[in-house]
Image (cartoon, rainbow, N blue to C red):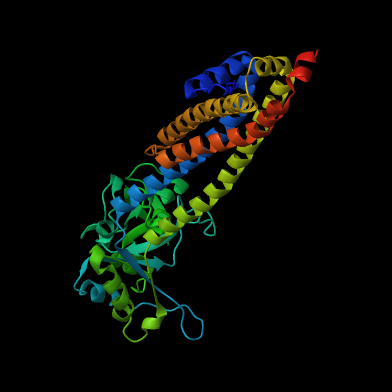
Amino acid sequence: MTRARLSPSRLSTVDVLRVGAAGLRARPARVVLSALGIAIGIATMIAVIGISSSSREQLLRRLDRLGTNLLTAAPGRTLFGDKAELPVSALSAVERIGPVSTASATGTVDATVRRTDHIPEAVTGGISVQAASAELLTTLEGDVAKGTWLNAATERAPAVVLGSAAAKRLGLGRIGVRVWMGDQWFTVIGILGPMPLAPEIERSVLLGFPAAETYLGFDGHPTTIYERSGEEAVAAVRAVLPRTVNPENPEQVEVSRPSDALAARAAAADAFTSLLLGLGAVALLVGGVGVANTMVISVLERRKEIGLRRSLGATRGQVRIQFLAESLLLSALGGVAGSVLGALATAGYAVSRGWPPVVPPWAIGGAVGATLIIGTIAGLYPAMRAARLSPTIALATT
């Protein structure tokens, strides 16, 4: 007569989850504290990624709005290292380039601006005085916050327009007041809004080329030429711009694209994000150590339960799966809570800064994957230790 071979019963996925959840419900306070470590790490990582993505999205939208088709030409250095000079006719030459849609120029004026003539001339507040062509605002796609821009009449009169930063440094918030430049008063007829692609304009006091020549002894040589063309023609215009601006010495002309500076800021932000992600990973690692510690203590405290289950027929594999499931559920709880907290932190910060809140889907997916990995690693040793316990020794434990 042959003896029937017994085979152990198998736990379904639902049973595994039910048993794992029962173990966690028995110790709610410890579970919350352990899950908190995981949640902090996940929340930090998602918030860092989300805030960085929101900032980058805002930057890209600003670039789309401002355009990447603005080029500037400025004087470089001569062969002997001296500051070069752009020809007086440089602007008119640039305007004749076929693809150029609009061009303008500014010229640095050797003068200071002050609120009154009683302020020492050396106190400039970092504000420069520049002559500007009437097309400057159109080329830079800027706007006037208060007052009006220079026109055919005011560019010949002792009238100025203040950049946004210059107005703040002078303490002026309205038009119609006067400022002292050179040896006479100039009337403020306008205050500009922010110009991200031309921050030097924000820090300047602007007046017309004719007025600068008449009242401040300006020599008429431009120091910066701004031009816009179609996106598809930027490379071609950039190639011919130096020779057009200064046919005799094209090597003395420096051409740049202001939007590249904004792109560089995005790259710097990415580098900073990587550093913060490293800090988030450390917090996540600390949370994983907390989960492992919780599971080890749980095994020690539940030796009688393990011995009883083994005596009733549970296999080592089933005990191992039970504790591994508890570890995964604990980590998943922290991961979900951390994802929600990170998304809320991102949304709150982005809205406060006026940015579009962006949380990349891959960040959420990565967070879930990280919690599962952490849960598996943290629960592997405690689960194996629980499975190795002898039923007799476990039941005899006091």
